[in-house]
Amino acid sequence: MKLITAIIKPFKLDDVREALSDVGVQGITVTEVKGFGRQKGHTELYRGAEYVVDFLPKVKVEAAVPKDLVDRVLEAIGRAANTGKIGDGKIFVFDLEQVVRIRTGETGPDAL
Amino acid sequence: MEQIAEVKYALDTFYFLVSGALVMWMAAGFAMLEAGLVRAKNTAEILTKNVVLYAVASIMYMLVGYNVMYGDGLNGVIPGIGFMLGSTDNTVAAVVAGGEDAPYYSSMADFFFQVVFAATCMSIVSGAVAERMKLWSFLAFAVVMTGIIYPVQGFWKWGGGFLDQLGFVDFAGSGVVHLAGAAAALAGVLLLGPRKGKYGPDGAVNAIPGANLPLATLGTMILWLGWFGFNGGSELKLSDVGEANAVAMVFVNTNMAAAGGVAAALITSRLLFGKADLTMVLNGALAGLVAITAEPLAPTALTATLVGAVGGTLVVLSIVMLDRLRIDDPVGAISVHGVSGLWGLGAVMLSNPDASLAGQLTGAGVIFAWVFVTSLAAWALLRAVLGIRVTDEDEYAGVDLVECGLEAYPEFTGK
Image (tube, rainbow over all chains, first blue to last red; front, top):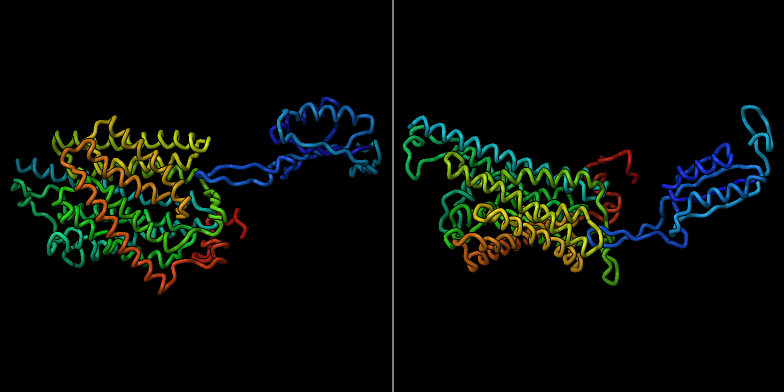
């Protein structure tokens, strides 16, 4: 099992959600986050004076998936969240040791 | 005939009162504009200043200001000193007698219309010194400004003093109200210094974005509405065909100048910054209104639009320039009312043959010098006695908590 965490542009959330459903992901967790990458925030103007916004709003999408689904999930997110412009975000993949479905007590891949 | 005279008197009085009520509403416009352009932590305090300065202006103008401005002067320079608004009004006999000197509106209506102008002048100051000036020092200044400083130069022009005799033309107060307010504000800002963090080393100008642009926009639209009373009421009379047409012309020109100011400020800000800065557009509307105030009757509608457009362009350039000079004016009051007010006094010459360059320059120079110097003295005295600036720590915490003990948006602002 793998935990996939994707940081994406907020306006791409609906596209990513749909793409994940299409490849068979059963559930996701979404968090509104802020941060910066190589882009290093951006500058805005107010009454002629520039100011730097250090942290840009992003959305973090987390999905726990069976190992054999990982490549298709990566491909789905990569396609749905891509705009070709700076700030599209990143995808991280972690090993997932254990999963428990709280209602039934099922564990492992059955709980996904 | 006598009944017609009475009805005309009633109509002109009614028109005057409604115009005054519209100008009173400009206090709401200033309050909303300033509340929108300061940070959330300074909102309740700027609202307090706005509503209290209006009350202070009303009281001081009743006690002494009105008498100074419209009483019998010793000569064209030194106004008479009188106290308390009288309670007598015009008699029916005086009204129906007719002739040149017959009164055509109520004296109380005249006081009401004038007192809201005094309040407007003071409202200009609060925005420029926002977010760092002590509440009580500001209110103390309002006492002096509306009791003495504003009425004296008002006497020089509208009270029949030497500026009026000199041929200085200022229909509704580009100079007497707006330039005067800006001069007092500039004196205050120079002694007060910029907000913490506004200017960095090496000439850096930092943005301190306002908390609520919907409020700032509402405030601007309220001021725009109130200006129909400000300029329209300054025609003083409505009750015959010529006067009714004149009032309508003033309304049209006032509106066109604001529209010209908006369009010009939008384009100027797009060219300078690459963005349509809403706050500049709002300042552009007000700059257009200030510019046409000195002569809203004589121009054609197209000329009025252009006068406003020049004001709207100047105001954007002026705001950028003042920041370069490290004169911190959070709402742009000095640029809107001072720079555009000066332009408005000059623009009178485009359409009114009675105006002369010498007369307009003298008027502008005298008003600015008088208000700036006396205000500087008043601010300096207040600084020595009460202090005019809050401590750095209080400025960081926000003057809402420090001065008012409450917050405008308690659920959104942390410390």
